[in-house]
Image (cartoon, rainbow, N blue to C red; front, side, top):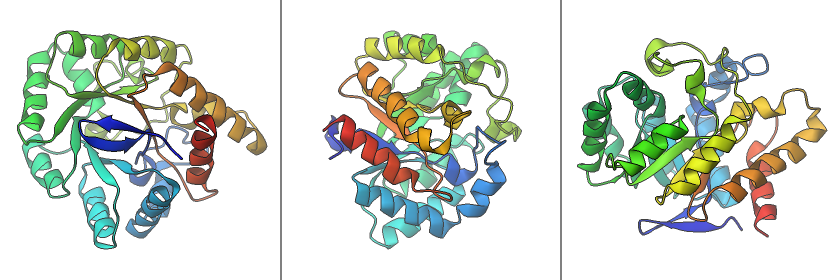
Length: 279
C-alpha cells in the first residue's frame, strides 16, 4: 500500500498525481514534445489516467487550475471519481477569477503557483505575494505556496507569509529564468531548462527545516534523470530517485509526480516502486 499522512484532517497518499503532462508541459522536448502530450491527453485520456491513479492507491490529484483541467475534473467526478483535489493556481488568469472557478471543484487545498511566486520575490514584491496567499486562505481552503528556491522556502516559513503548506521543487528552475515571468504567461516552452543534480541537496536541507507539510516535486527532474539510459534501466533509476527523495523529506511530506501514459504505464511503474519502498 501507499502510505498516507494526516494533512490538516485529510488522509493524503504520500504519492500524489501531478498534471504537467496533462497540460503539455514537457521538460524533455527532444523525446516528448508538449504538442505530443497535448495530442495524447484529451479529456478522456486524462480521466482514464486519474481513475488508474485512484485504483493504484493514489488518493489525491494536484491539478492546474486552468479551464481545460477544470472541465476534466468535472468529468472525472461525474463518472464517480473519488480522489481529493488540490490545486495549483493558474498564472494565466486573474487570481480572484481563478479561485472562484477552482472552488467549484471542491478542492481541499490550493497553492500559489511557484514561478509566479519566485518572480514576485525576485522583484521585491513579497508583500504582493503575501496578499495573494491571503486571498487563497480567505476562501476557507488550506492555502499553500510553491517555490523552486530553497532560500525562498525558508524565508516564507520563518517569516510566516501565511501558507499552511508548501510545494517545493527539488531542482531550482529559477537559475535560468530569474527575472522572467512564468511560462503560463510568456508562452515559452521548457526546452531550454537544464536541471542541476546538486540543487536537490539544497532543497532537501530546506525541506527538513520547515515544520509544515511539503509536497516535493520534480523528483525525476522533469524526466531528465532518465536521459542517456536504456529503457530497461529506467525503473532502477526511478527507484533510486524516489527512495532518495522519501529518505530526505519529512514523514509528513508527500511527493507529486506527473505521468505520460502514451508509451507505457508510468503510473503502475511509479506506484509499484513506492509500494516496494514502503513495504
